[in-house]
Image (cartoon, rainbow, N blue to C red; front, side, top):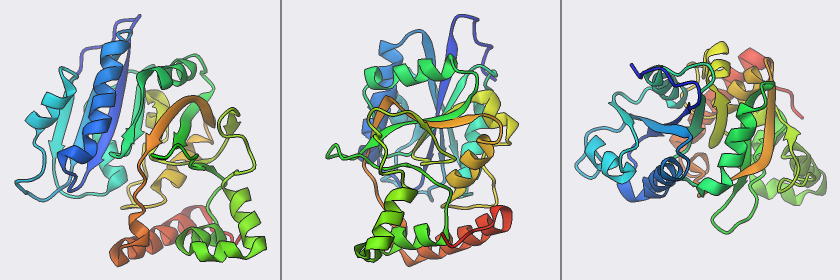
Length: 278
């Protein structure tokens, strides 16, 4: 168990779930976490990793991750492929956070500059009404990823799966509405009950209050479910005080297996929340 935080120093635990990720693909994220720890000593930064990969010589071991982190505390678990949300819940339990600490859910394909993230972290700590915050998310080319959306609908999911449908003017307008693309993401802070799970800053007490991720999902829509529950106990917002880069890989668009997983998640989401057409 981690020692209790001193009153003047909060902890940040990044939570990372791996599955067949090679070291070069996660080095930018590890370097970002290391830089944050080195440049922001007022935070105690640590990383929890759940690796559900089958054994393989090309996959990074805990010692290789520690070497990249340069002294940042690491809690590493190698286990079965239990699903994205369940793995993050395992990381949260391992972190043993105090209520005032922060738990950051991150994808492996994220990187950030510490100076572009710390204003958001400080803002969340100073905003007790906030139960979850997401930064401005941009791609490798600097283009904005419209990651603060309205709650899922069948039409929105179809437009995401079949982008050619956006050639229909009415569907294109709906897609922009659903993704809040009419808002100024780069300067506007606004509430959203569906923030992308690629990077979520969550006060530890809020994550615990809603029980973390719903473990009925294996992959897909677990972020929509989590943020929607967090929005019932506090403010869930997009806030461009923070900025991260996301090298987005849309696996469900390439893999039949992931597409089937998405369909299953849609049924689970519908059973909990309902799922309107539009």
